[in-house]
Length: 223
Ligand SMILES: *Cc1c(COP(=O)(O)O)cnc(C)c1O
Image (cartoon, rainbow, N blue to C red; front, side, top):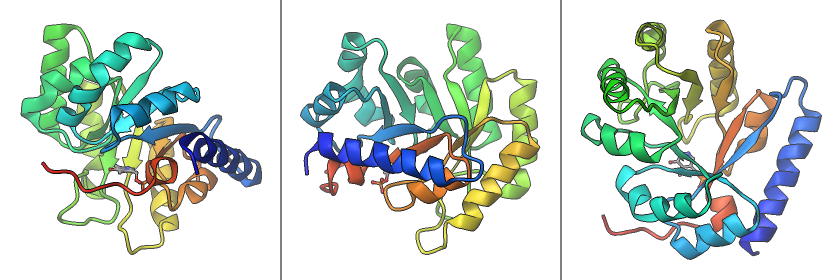
């Protein structure tokens, strides 16, 4: 299957899942996750009309996207991987949305960079819904304090993101994230990947993050 056929099939599946959902989000956007995908694959995807992309590493995104963003001004890039405080400056330059805000210190660094540069990407808070020790994201008990802190700093917080534990049924995690967003008046919900994006749509995802179902299996890259 080509990228264009994969994209078409996924968009059709998202549309069908929205139709079947009781309360779908007003819109569900496809974030094409292009980590490890070389330039040609990304260009092919842009050629199919896709404009929304996600990368999980600042450095890799820096090597691929500045040129593409100059060429395609309507291209939108989301950071979906963990962000170290010392990479905030670069991230703020390159990304339109950072989906991985997960700690007070990072919120402070983003606010400081905003005050210096006048620029701040839109933000989602990553929630570690499975409370996995090795995984990024704020644990549920600390979500409220982090949201309050982001509001105090006047950061553009738009929603929540989660990556359920690989071996769990994703449904309760999606339901939990959706309720958390509702309770805090946040409108965006980034959840669902290649294996479960239709389920996420059912629970109100505004953004699904899909990599392998578009680009095929990832080759391990040297780091
Ligand atoms: C890689 C990645 C995805 C996409 O995963 P696929 O299973 O390839 O669709 C989604 N979200 C995050 C945070 C990722 O790192």
